[in-house]
Image (cartoon, rainbow, N blue to C red; front, side, top):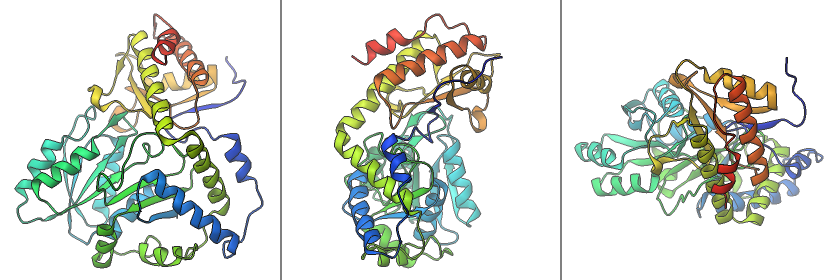
Length: 386
């Protein structure tokens, strides 16, 4: 019987490892959320979040998970019976669809095999057929956390433009924000949904909506019921650095530190580091003679890698063995991928030496689980990081 010893490594695709500086910030004395100290903090955070989302427009902060931020994006933009175009790229894309349908929205879901991202040509084709503009919004998961497949958001917007369609573009950036390039304004996204516990290196508890002027205008017309999620009172209070309800102030203090860390490294370097670590992980998987779940190189994620286990083996068993033997938490398969894959998160607070240790631990766990990988993958990962 193996026993967990040493530090715990969270290599799920979220929550990710929280840096010591952020943990120390969480332990600071709580401040009054009606004070000028809080107002100054909130205004600084609004500026920092705009820089991360790459927008000049407002970013709403909620005490919520990413699921809450999903709901906020829908209820502020749409009305009962509105049609939404969505794409079956993975487990979380289907959950967002389910949430929309529970609000009385009509979702046209383009089926998919969970191994490919959104095809912009299909976006153009569907929207061109919608001559009466009954589709009010297009939802896209930028980086599908269940599969390690990325969708080309910029190309989706270009396809919408070619179709001459006025639908809003709503994008889930939950596992891409702070890990991969995302350009809210340049790509003309209307609402970007994010959360705290992935590329922003925080514990769970904060959800985000980055807004375009078109989205703010749509919120004035939307007839879906909303109170807690309503952007309008939040935007009004945010002008002075306040909120209409109590936020988790210690998480906001810690957010300030995580934003500082991202800016100290520089976002271009952050994204390059994530690309290097993703390439290194894929090199290790190739050395193990296992298959990536993502079927096309253009869709490879910089935030996580989903690995297909051989027939006759259980991906969930692999995650259990790796946790017990190396104290490394991996992501299991979700939905239709349960038991078929395991997921290695390589996002957030991570360096080369750390990742090599994770790869070695996963290789040892695979062997203990009965999957006879021929090499550790560490040498190949190191070569890919040169």
